[in-house]
Image 1: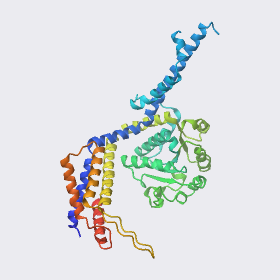
Image 2 (image 1 turned 180 degrees about the horizontal axis):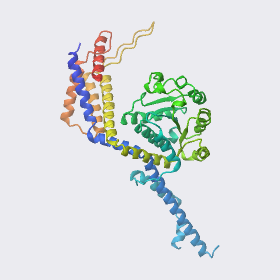
Image 3 (image 1 turned 90 degrees about the vertical axis):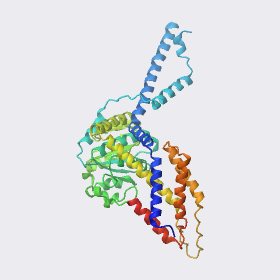
Length: 78
Length: 361
């Protein structure tokens, strides 16, 4: 039926191992590990955005108030 | 017009654009800000630190995709903490999405920390309705949650031998974006005295503070800020135990096993026709589809190899491609008669057994 169990198994094993080695280069594994580390700090990364945008809104409020009070003074306190 | 007067006339669209940029940029270029610890989070952390080795926590997986970005980092950090301290984890949810979303975390973190399903953790999956189950755990967990998420029997799992009721569970921690925490507090804590904590979205935290202040919750993680704190705690433990190199190696081995299985499955599908379905009574048997010609299979194999190599940022040279194609062709030719027909089903059986034994060995 086919050319012996040993030959098929050996060929199958060589192919499977060869493909696994090709598709898991050290660089690729390193990239995957970096992804794991990024997942570990996902909330902290999210907090970076939240902190930055909070600071921006504080700046907006301060600047808006400066503009408002300055223009009111120019109009004579009305 | 004075400069400060101009400030009040800036186009809203410019302000929105600025906000969008300030949100997006730190996601691309992290600021790596440290966060300070707050009392409700410290209480959860310290409680878990005091749970003895091989203690048990039960996590309630009652979150869904809408709140996943906020809640899952908390769950991930708590699972890391538990795995690093050898605390056993039971998981159960009555939100249909939660247990399935969390299963990915178990499958990823388990192998990284050397933990096994059924031995170190069990995801009991989605079971409904919640009330009879929460009350039933108080008398016999095995009766109300008889199988895990994959349908395996809980009674056959080594870690479940000693876990029968709330008396064997040190803490229940519910992860949710809704009011499911109340159900645990009202029925599990009040009726059976098991301690409860919660990891919730920022918007529902306010209504849980009375439970925290009255001691009905031992601690509370609320919103992304608290998730960030717990991540820091988990990282500190990992550094303290110097687990990162071990975890990295476990991750590498896991990737290899996973990829090898994927490739073996592809080769099997390519080289073997599917088994013929037995015909129903009174119907003509379906004709067996012959396996495609070797050349066609080889093209599929080369495409598959190329895609995997590209994913690994590894470009195959023409010589390498030809060499792999030749090896595959040899194997495909050797197995060309192994289609699942009554005539050669014995040969297919032999090949399947061979592959199975090779995978075991």
